[in-house]
Image (tube, helix red, strand yellow):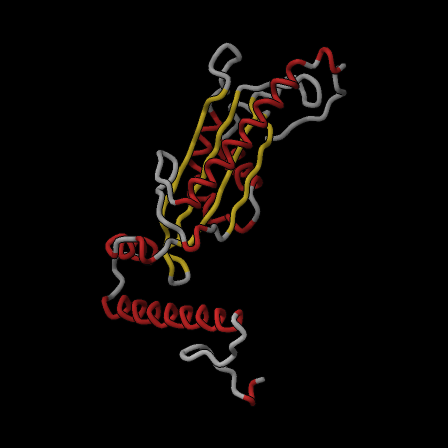
Length: 236
C-alpha cells in the first residue's frame, strides 16, 4: 500500500492528477465532517453519537494516501493497516484489521463507476481508565487515478480517520455504562469488584469537580477555594 513516485506529466496533459486532487480535497472535507459530528455528539450510520466531555476528542489521527496493491494476501493488508496508524492505536486496528482486509482485498471501483465509493466505518464503546470511551473509525476509498506524480497503476485514493473521546457520564444511560464495563473486563466480574470500581469512579469524579472549582478560583484570583485541593506549606 503506497504510491510510487514517477516523472510528472506536463501540466496541460495531467488531467488525471487534477481529478485526483479534487478527490483528495473531497476526502479531506469528509474527514473533517466525520470528526465534527463526533465532537457534537451527532449519531449517524458511521458514529454512535454519544455526548463527549467538553465536546472534545482525547486523540485523533487521519491519513489520505494512495492504495496501489490489489488482491494482496490478508496478512499483507493487515500489516499495511497497522503501518497506517501510529502505535497508539494498535489495539484498535487489531479489532478492525479483519474487516479492512476484506475491504481492501476487493478490486477498486472501475473508472466508469461512481467516482467515490467504498466506505467502511465502525464506532463502539470501551471501558478504559474508569471511563467510557467512544472509538470511531472511518475509511473511504475512491477510483481516482493519477498519471503525473503517482504511478499509472495507482488504483485508489484512501482516506482513513480514527479517534476516541471520553463519554460524558451525565449523558449515557447507566445500562450502557455497565455493558461497556463488562464487555471490556469480562462478564464474570464479581459484584464486589463492580462496587469497588463504582466507588473509585465516584471518588475520582469528586476530585475532578474539586479541581475544576479550584481552577475557577485561581482564575478569579482566589487561592483558598472551599472544597478545592489544598497544598500544605510542607508540600510547597
